[in-house]
Length: 519
Ligand code: NAD
Image (cartoon, rainbow, N blue to C red; front, top):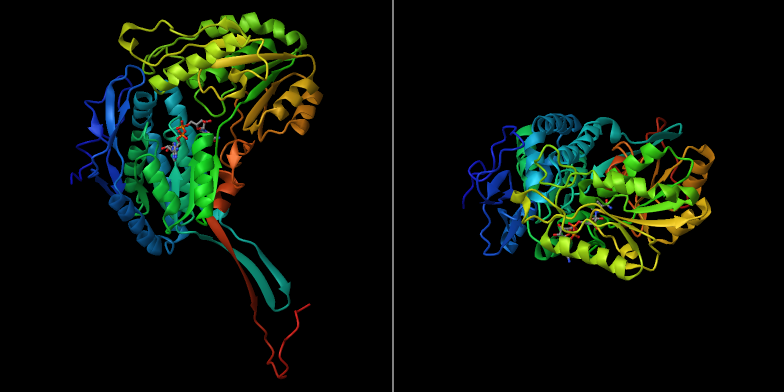
C-alpha cells in the first residue's frame, strides 16, 4: 500500500492559478489519518472539463476498506466524544486559518476538476470556510438550557454527539459542501466519513490534510470514495447514525429512504428551479446585471442558480438588453483571467443541456440567444462548453421549464401581475430559492409573505444564507426536516439529554411510596 500522500498529491504550498498539476494520479483514501491507495480494481476517471484531459482516478472503495474506515471512526468516537470542547474549538480555529492560507490550492483543484472559474472556485472555498468559522463558536453554540423548576429541583439540557456521521457530496461545490458537513459534526464531538463526489474529489483531500495539520485526531475524519456501492454501504452500516446528503433528486430520495429505513437521521438537499421575478419598478441596471450573473455564473451549475426569469408587465421590454449583457460574458477555461463562464462538468451534461435547449425550441419557445457550440480558444476545443442561452415565451408545460437544466440557460416567462408570478412559483414543486427585483417595499413584503420558497432574495439574486442562519430550501428541494448548518445543523449532529435533579436538604422522614404522577 502506498501510504504517502505527498507523492500523489499536489504540494500544499499555495500555487499560482496557472500552474497545472504535473500528471494524473490516483486519489487516495484517507483513513485513520493516513492517505492510502485503495486496493480496488475499479477506478473512475476524472477529466478536466475544459479540455477532457485525465486528471485523476478515483477508487470504488472496496467493502473491506469501507468497513475499516467505519470501524476506525467508531473507535475514534470513544475518545473524541470525551475531548474537551475547548480542544475541539482550538482544532477548528486552526483549521479555518489553514483553509484561508491554502485557498488558492484548493480552488485550483476545483477549477481543474469541476471547471468553474478560478475566482468562483475561491468563492466556493470561502463560503465553506465561513461554516468552519461559525463552528469555532461551538462553545456558545452548544450551550444548553437550565431552569430551576422548584426550590430543590433543576432541569437542564445537554447536547451530545451521535457517533459516526456520514456526508455524501455533489460535484458542484467540491469544498463548500463537505465544509457544510464535517466541521460542525466534528465540533459537536462526532466522528465523520465523507464521500466526496467521484467527479471532483481533490478539494476534499486537501481539506483532509489540513484537518490533520490542524490537529483533528486520526480516525475522527475519514474520506472514502466511489459511487452507488459506497453510498449503499454508508446507508446500511450500523455504526453510522446520521447521513448528510446534497445532490440530485434521484440519489437524494433513494438515500433518504434507505438511510431512514435503517433508523438513521438523514438530511438531504436536492434539486431546484429558482425563479427571479422582475417588477417594472426595479432598478433596471442592477437587475439585469444580477440576473445575468445568477443565471450564467458557474455555467448554471449551482442549486441556487436563478434559472427562470418571470417578467411582470412592462419589465419584459428589458429582455433585449439582457441578451446584450449575456453576450458580453467570456466563455473559456476557468484559469483564464478573463473567464466568466467555464465548461459543464461532463460531455453527458453538455449533451443533456443542448437537448433541453432544443426541446424548448421544438415546444414553442423563442431562442433569443443560442449558446450551443460557442467559440472558445483553440486549447479548449475539446471542452464541455455551452455559452449563455436565453429562451423566451416559455410556458410551464415545456420540458425546459419542468426540468432542472443545470446549465447556463435562462428560461423567461411573462405575466401581467405579481400575483400571477407568485402563483406560478408556488405551483412549481421546488422550493429552494427565489428572488424579487423591485423598488417597492410593499411588493417585496407581499412577495415574501406569499411565496412558498425557503430562501428569498429582495434585489439579491442568490440568497444563500450565511452560516449563522441555515440553508432553508423547502418543498421538493429537501428531504428530511433538519437543515444544513446554523442552529439546525447543530441540532442534526447532536441529540439532547434533559436531566431533572432533586437535591433535598431536609431528611425524608415518612415511608409512603410516591405512586402518583407528581403535580
Ligand atoms: P448526484 O446526485 O449525481 O451526486 C451526488 C452524490 O450522490 C454523489 O456523491 C454520487 O456519488 C451519489 N450518487 C449519485 N447517484 C447515485 C445513486 N443512484 N445512488 C446512490 N448514490 C448516488 O448530484 P450531482 O450531479 O453531483 O449534483 C448536482 C445536483 O445537486 C443538482 O440537482 C443540484 O441542484 C443539487 N444540489 C443541491 C444543493 C442544495 O443545497 N439544494 C446544493 C448543491 C447541489
